Length: 113
Image (tube, rainbow, N blue to C red; front, top):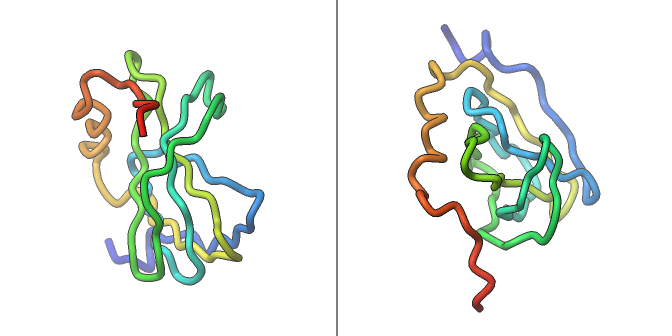
């Protein structure tokens, strides 16, 4: 399968359109613009509570979705810092990378600065 067969077209997002990265079979390639990534509490598929800054992403970088974990109520959102174009690549793997949520066994956000 080629990249052209599995991409679904560019997604354009702006400042107040955060993207919840919750699909482990989708990789988002940053084509233009920039985003800030945050760890956030998630309940019933919706972001709830404070954001905790992780890092910024720029053109040429890839963002990976993580599957929701039953014991861990955390997710990652990407918030555009400027108008941003993302290329979603769906079905890039067999979902094995969805185990990323198991890496952090305590699943808690630190509020210490």
